[in-house]
Image (cartoon, rainbow, N blue to C red; front, side):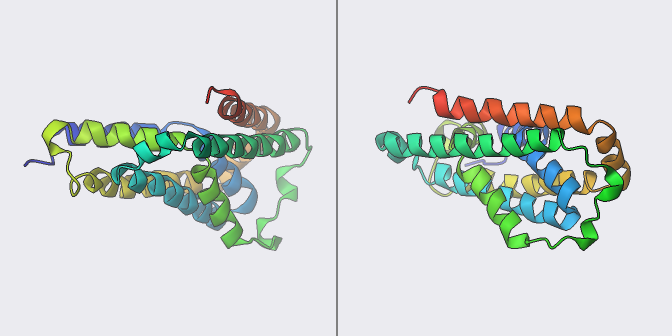
Length: 211
């Protein structure tokens, strides 16, 4: 049985493009890095990675039928996820209308709770059950037809892990760079408004989409 086929590498490319494209997780990493510093951004990114790969392991373990059977549990997760994204949207809009200047932000004097940021990252992805559908698609593309057996199902998940870590931590480095942060504060109101709108759309979609 051949696992590392062309389809396998196409699946990895799909995953790379998916995690690298701007989305709620990357926007949250960027905001955390800007306001709490690089270390907090990295810890938050690692939390998101853990949450994401929790769903990956679930998908590889074949628990999708179980989640389908207990649809009420999935619906509750969607509601909680929607509320959490609306909470993030509220904070983003609050920042957008806060006339805080870059020079007044001194991260070195802040007491940063790294476990809190890690937990926030984990929760952000655990409350996004749509992630399991993405993982199922990745596994299906990477290991079609006869390759789908118990052992090989975990290979794409493991292969995607370093890609996810690299991309998510890369965002934290990028948005804790002084030049990038200064540029952000030049367009602060507009960027924070876009972030808030994005989180609002995601939150409302999770809450109001059909059960």
